[in-house]
Amino acid sequence: MRLLQEIRSELNRLYLFELEDRLRVEAVFYRGDTLCVSSQVGCAIGCPFCLSGSKGLFRNLSDEEIYSQYRLLKDKLPIKRIAVAGIGEPLMNYQNVERAFWMFKREGLKVSFYTTGFPTDKLLSLLDLPHNGITVSIHTLDEKKRKHLLPHAGSLKDLLETLETHLKTLSKRKRKRLAWLTCF
Image (cartoon, rainbow, N blue to C red; front, side, top):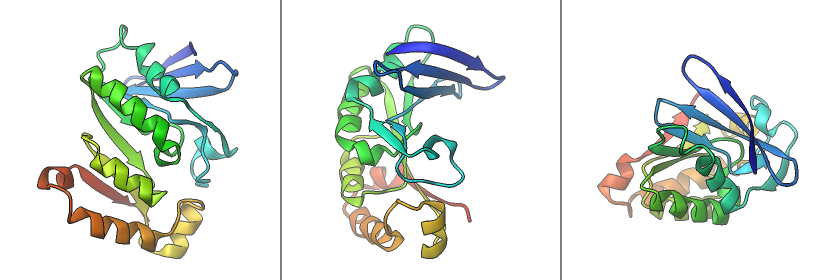
């Protein structure tokens, strides 16, 4: 993996990486301390408002490729936090995302996640990690609208049932670190 390009704005910096197979992913440095990393090349969810997944999923990133987005920038930027929120649905590449999570934790970084919550069995595993926050993008409580907005994100009913059941088993501290977004 190699760094191809840096694009700066007043608030953020976008980094374009080229992988060994010549596919590309992005990472974004924001808030002055957070690096948002990608977990996949493309995305299978198919949200009509998201350019990252407009061509579908090409492949999962390996744990080393996820970690390398940080490794290649750590000496250039004051990174204290990782947000697994870039290109891709982290739960659809859970095994590699979890391994990268532990690599980040060994570096002393705080790690948070942004997800559609699908697949829900992986969400349960993610909730149990010593994370620094999980945001679940629900978008709407109307199942039909959600299917339009997140075509391949699974059933809203299943997601809400999973959250309702599992939230009871989480510590107060972990419940505080869970958020969900509804937009429409």
